[in-house]
Length: 189
Image (cartoon, rainbow, N blue to C red; front, top):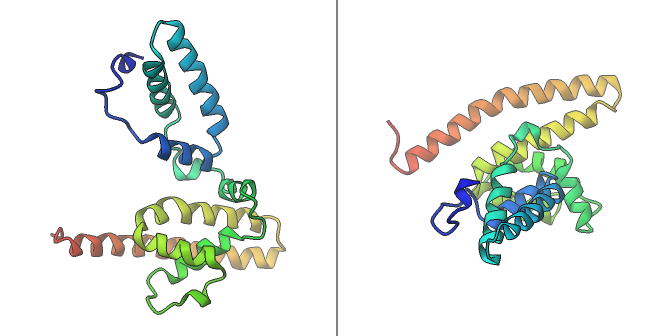
């Protein structure tokens, strides 16, 4: 807890808002929030003023509950978050896979999207390709794989083959995206 000595001079690993959203998406918010309250109480007991205790508690929570690697985030965490917000009839996995199929297609129109959420996700993903490929797509693929475990065997065989092919092509596509980003900014070798 040495870094809690002067919360004004230490850089934040991520903002409070970003940390809150991330922890909710990862399904860790309740546990992290309870930890933050515990640390804040401990710091107040040690004589810290309210500001120092609050800032120190947030910092400790963010450090203790660092971002999970994509494979550790529950595949259905986003679906659970949507249900908490009152959205029941959305197939987020299908929307993410639709976005993947249309990410580079500039001719796709809003009416071709499965829904308004898929269109908004496509727009966001075009501006945040790294986040899409690093977080959303792996979660969607994991969720789809989980769904397949409960399907009939022939469908499972075909879908798994499709997922393997998608995974193989994804690596090449991702490298191509990175290279094109480097070229756009004059960073290519």
